[in-house]
Length: 77
Image (cartoon, rainbow, N blue to C red):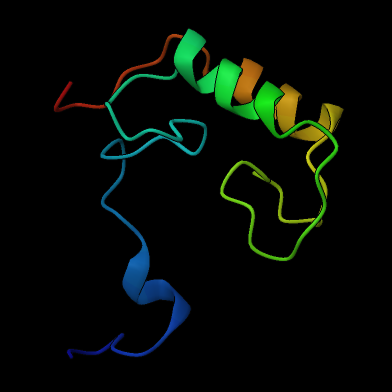
């Protein structure tokens, strides 16, 4: 629906509404998100929620993205 219906842009949240590294969607990037990434360490697949850079593997590149947002909070947290 709307101008972006059925496109990739349709799933973008408003700015500061969501964090890339908040894998459990609790509004903060913290230890529980780090544990989730570690639990899938070096996993490979096309659609891994913890693969933040979407390169098909969970590795140090994804950990670096999590570190950039660590302890950041959404506006609704």
